[in-house]
Length: 275
Ligand code: SAH
Image 1: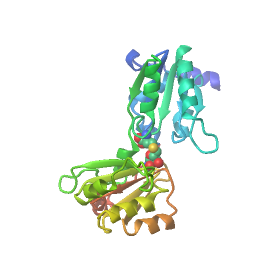
Image 2: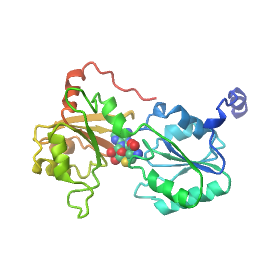
Image 3: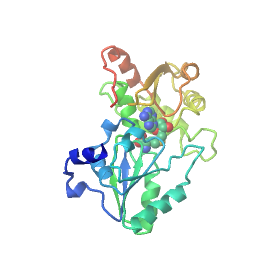
Image 4: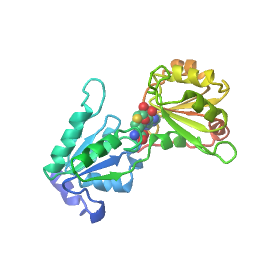
């Protein structure tokens, strides 16, 4: 069977510019989960790589379709078998220096909360050539598939993206909650990633700083996956709703009047059907 499948496989017609380059690390965005949302460039680079180091959020369907000769390494940072960032960095350098065409495949976009920036610096400091292939970030995809426009001419002309990890209690929080609250109160859309476990504290921080409890919020879980789910609430109700629905990561929260826009189109919006 394998032999005949080999024979059926069309000659690769991947242009030279888009082939993974030996001795180079390619920081590639995998998109939010559905393999159809890989960019064409990402697909080409993946198909011509010698080794692919991927994250936990990169779905099996994306790596299982790679050529058999490609080495696939899961460096996912799930608590049980976590690979420290320093070890990942070292392995990238090691393989590139050995002459391999290396892909570092990350969920969404590599430079949006993906530590791609740190990897790029590490490689640059060691003179290891690297390339970047942007991906469809969940910041864009999660509201998109839920029918929530991030901006809307009548409602929101600004978008702020934060990580929920920066909890208000954290002493050196990089987030200015008063400023964020002003932003939301003045009509900006707020997108929060990695915010499921800290939802209660972050919502409380917004409300304490003056955001109306009636402000709409949506939690989009597993956007573009087969079991994608949207929970719609207001800031006052979201913590209870999320607990009742057992909302769990990965999920992206969208706060602002744009969320209400979805209510009007929800019945007509076709569900996103993943590959
Ligand atoms: N680089 C990634 C983000 C990594 S941080 C990107 O650009 O998308 C991980 C967080 O991203 C998760 O905690 C979650 O908030 C969000 N996320 C990733 N995949 C998601 C998905 N399929 N649906 C909803 N949120 C997702």
